[in-house]
Length: 408
Ligand code: HEM
Image 1 (cartoon, helix red, strand yellow):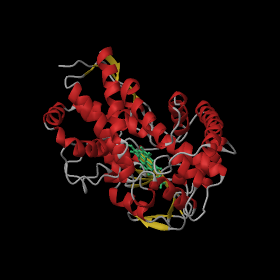
Image 2 (spheres, rainbow, N blue to C red; image 1 turned 90 degrees about the vertical axis):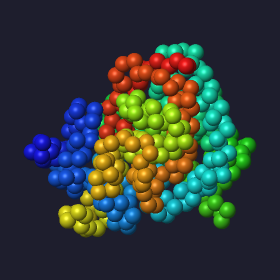
Image 3 (cartoon, rainbow, N blue to C red; image 1 turned 60 degrees about the vertical axis):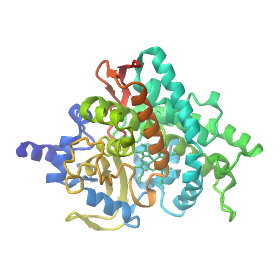
Image 4 (spheres, rainbow, N blue to C red; image 1 turned 180 degrees about the vertical axis):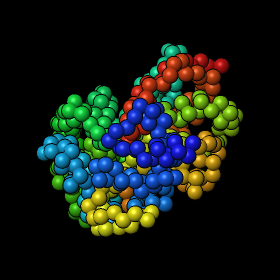
C-alpha cells in the first residue's frame, strides 16, 4: 500500500493525468500529501497538497502573485483568451484587483443576497415541478445547471430571453484553463470570448442608456464605478463581467450536482439529512470540502521562498490543490469520510485571503436551497445509470446524471 502510494506520488504529472485520476483523484492526493507535498512537476512548476502550504500561499500575496501574464503568454499567445484571463480580477494583483473587487463585493452584501432568496426559491420550485412532471431527468441539465445561470443572469440583469448562450460560453472559456488543452478547446475558448464580448458591448450600451439600481445590479455598479470617481476602462469592464458570469456557473452547478450524487452514494448521510433538514448548512460545507467543485488554483512566486522545506525560485508557477488540502488529515478528522454534520470544517473550497471567493455567500445559499428542496420533494430519487464526469481536473463535476424522481 505504502509502496503503491510512493509510486503514485513519484509518477504524478499534472500534464499527464490518467483516467483513474479523473475518476477519483483522492488516492493520488493522499499519496502526494504523504510523500511529496511540494512536488516538482516535469515542466518546472510545483504542485502543493498540504493545507498549511496552501494557506501560506493564499495569505502571502506579495510572494505568491495571482498575475498570470507571464504564465498565460505561451499558453494562449496573443488571443482573446489571453486578454480575457489577464484582465479578470482573479488573475490580477492590486491595484486592478482591489478596485474591481470592491465594486463587486458591494453588490454581494449579505443584505443584497438576502434580497435574492425569494426569487431563488420560486425558481427552484418551478424547476422541481418540471422534474416531477418528467419523472426521468438529468440532474445536471434539468436542475443543477439551470439554477446558477438564472441567479447570475439576475445579478447582472441580463434579459431572460438572452441567457441561453451564457452556459456554453462559460464552459468553453473555463475549459481552456485546464492544465493541458488541445487546439479545438483553444479555438472554442477564443470564439466564446469574442462572442461574449460582442454580446456584452450591446448590453453595456443599453445599460448606459438606461441605468439600473446599483444596489442590486452589478453591471450598473461596474459601469458607474466608485463614488470617488474611479472607473474601470471599457476592456476591464467587459472582461470582469465575463469573469463574473463564468465564476458562478460551473462551480455552483457542480456544488449542487456533486452534492446530490454524493448523498445518493452515502445512504446513511442522505437519510440523516432528509430526517433533519436543519443540517443543510453543515451538509453544504461538507459537500464543498469532500468534492470541491474548484480543485486547483494557481500562483507565481515573485521571489525565492521556502515552502514545506523546499526552496522555490522566483518566477515559479505553483498549483494549489484545494481538493487535496480539503482532505488533509492534519486539519480534518477522518478526512475521507463524508459527514454532513462535520464541525469544525474550515475547508478551502472558496480559497482564502485577498482573492477568497466573492460569491461564496450566494453559492452557499444556492446550494442549500437547491439541495434541501430537492430532497424534500424527492426523498426517493435514484440514479438510473452511472453519472457522466466532466473530465476536468480543475472543475470537478458531472456533465449528466440520469435519475428518476417520484413524489412519495
Ligand atoms: C460553489 C461555488 C463556488 C466555488 C467553489 C468558488 C470558488 C472560488 C475560488 C476557489 C476562488 C479563489 C480563486 C483564487 O484565489 O485563485 C473564487 C474566486 C471568485 N469567485 Fe467564486 N466560487 C463559487 C461561486 C461563485 C459565485 C456564485 C460567484 C459570483 C456571484 C463567484 C465569484 C467569484 C469572484 C468574483 C472571485 C474572484 C475574487 C477575487 O479575485 O478577489 N464565485 N471562487
